[in-house]
Length: 281
Figure 1 (cartoon, rainbow, N blue to C red):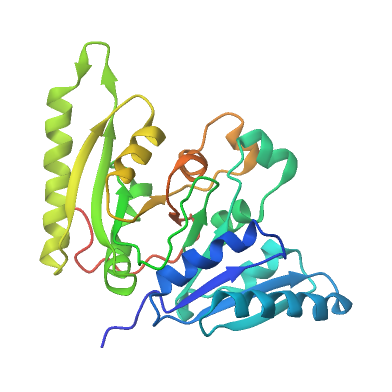
Figure 2: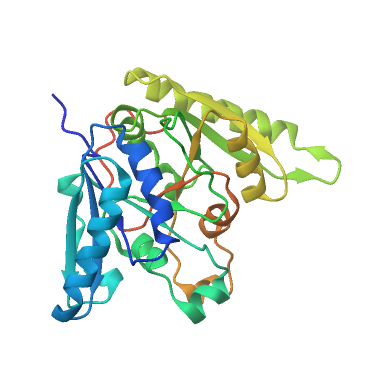
């Protein structure tokens, strides 16, 4: 049997109701057969008892069997980066305010730092992500743009399909000219997505694809996701630090802030599985 790339869901908590919005998302992604661990990070030993009590309360409220852990001695992001292991199949699920670049620079963000430094994928639950209820997620919209960065999503497709039960949609956004869609370019992109979908199909995966249009990529992605069945969006990022975002907007941050669903993020340090049929044709 092929080992699962996602075999453990980890939810960082800080005692806030905002952080706990990740709990039902984690439960839905786990689908009843993937272990869930709730984790808190504290600076000193005397903070362990209240943190442990907080995590145990959240575990009881979740209503499914979970493990709990408290990390001591490091800032939250650094503690979590050291805790998370790709070889253990960890998948992080956490909330984010998905602030703008200036907001991240001034206020900092554990989610932002995890995306940039973690060796495992991070599912961001943004402010507009709908609560999943009791039903599992069904579709995943993979944001493909032909770049080496976005191509790092493709080896993740088997894990998204086999481990999380998600049906893959390859989706690319084409900009529109002043007179309308760029027809020739659209045809080329359609052919490329079709070839990529066929390459994944040769690996035994049923994959759909589509090309959207619009000047605002994040808005087009969010709109397309709304048409899917209980979706996630998947995106790969170069992980610009907050200062760099002052000069260049982050599609990942914008999608996480505006999407109606959680966003599965493959950061620059994420350990991507061997391709095995999941690369471009």
